Amino acid sequence: MNPFEMVVVIVIVVMVAGIIRARMGIGHGRHGPAAAGDGEENRRLREEVRTLKDRVEVLERIVTDRTHALDMEIERLRDR
Image 1: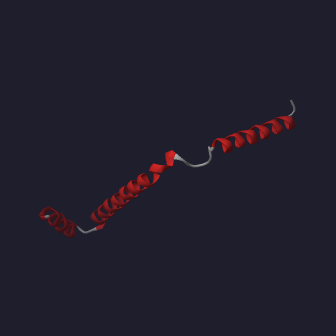
Image 2: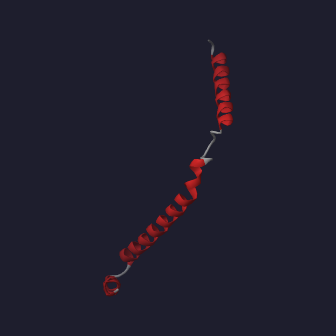
Image 3: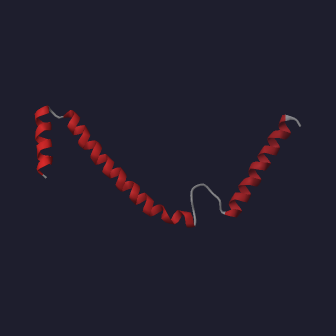
């Protein structure tokens, strides 16, 4: 089999696989019953990211504040 025939066979195999995937409903991304929980999972992940961003913000403030301000912040948090 020469290189040209090999390329033609590969292209045909890829095209047939694409047709089979399209007929079976298998595409890029998730569709159908498995995608139903995506909204809930996205909401949960967004909330987790928001919480982590808040924590990073506090840590950045602690690292960049002066020692006096840090002591006052710690005492304020203890009083809660």
